[in-house]
Image 1 (cartoon, rainbow, N blue to C red):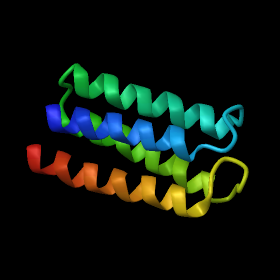
Image 2 (cartoon, rainbow, N blue to C red):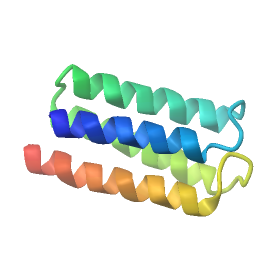
Image 3 (tube, helix red, strand yellow):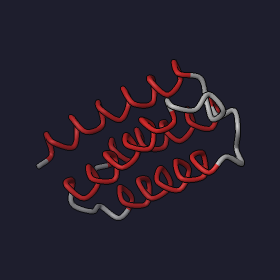
Length: 94
């Protein structure tokens, strides 16, 4: 689970570097969910619960694509790809 935690922290770092509008409601939602993802990994929650958190982040990223205000589409695509790889890693742990 340490590898998952490391990847979640990397996701947070990328998110912060990609973010264009910190005060946007979607940005705050993403930030909150990514922080919860890190917390879930630190607490060694069941991989399925952590995967549900990742799915939640992906749903928000899908909404972000409808708005150019939060971040560039390429950046949201990169974050989504990172989330998908994280989901694959979590499925291997189950």
